[in-house]
Length: 459
Image 1 (cartoon, rainbow, N blue to C red):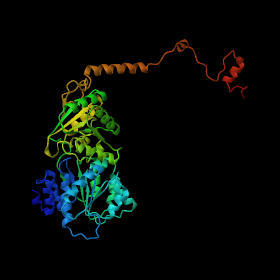
Image 2 (cartoon, rainbow, N blue to C red):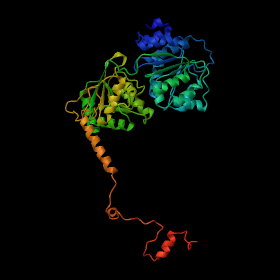
Image 3 (cartoon, helix red, strand yellow):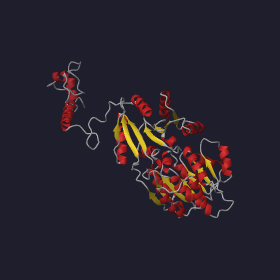
Image 4 (cartoon, helix red, strand yellow):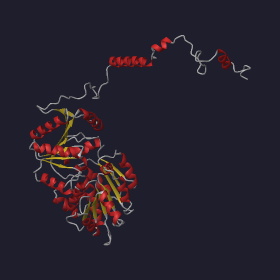
């Protein structure tokens, strides 16, 4: 129970207003440590309830601390995308509903002057994306010397987006006595440990998953495909025949997201798309249409999908296979949230088989291969597959034949080519270069003198 964690009654009231009564695993593990005053390094899966795990102790600290009225911003929450920042803003407002604390937001896509005006009001909690916040610091935003808590939400994704230097630069503008809580879906990311070493001091490490464990409540399947045309027809049939409320489809590029969205719309499937090339207003319109049920299928790229606040996604489709295990884990984490059953399907072409195999090895699992009736693929995986699932090498006889062919070719290439003109000259003595031929107008005596330079005439 949250009441047993010593939370302020105003926070308990805010939780009850959202019908939240029991803490999740990550909340129960993180909150006592966070409230003890330590730095944190937390690994938790997407959809595990990690937002409240840092939001509740953060607000609790601000409610109980003696803070001067002249103090500036006291807590900074950094997020990789504006979508996630807006989701955090929504959840923070719900938790502050019965308090006097204020929250502001700074992210790309919104009016800069309006944000600057909000910052001058010194909200106790600020939610920001790294790029836009650093822009404010580089112009005229004063250093946040009063800051007590820095939260890095989805730190691994911010690193993937190239925000390492921005985060370090921002940290230099913050109070030195602050606490730093770093949250990541995986701690195996090469840069997470480095960033934690730069920004935290003896952090408490809390790992609630290995980062390679798949969610047991998510059914994970694979549909083999011959190519893009076959993929398009198969996904159309899948979406038309499968019973679901909402589906999230992932592509690896913005161009592919737009193309697939237009194709599905032409097949009379209610589809929308979100990606980095869209304006914030356009993104907001698509998300609002989806929340109202006017869009049933959302096509998105990895970055754009981060922070999407949509409940009830029953089906995640990897139209393009994720490039690595971490991205795959992030994708399928959009379904099966809060213990609900989820379903993830990946379309695999011959070119994507190795990606699939790599993700399976990373997650230490094996995906079930299924087919759509009437849309079966001619491609059934590598021709020769060992029991372990790895492609088998050529037979020994084939190897021996290949070695013999290579040896013959090498012997043939090493032979000296014999020309007819060389055969004609066999046995003939070659004249020295500096000796003229007889018959070229030279007398024998002159030749003798040339060959005997120590003769008297030569002297």
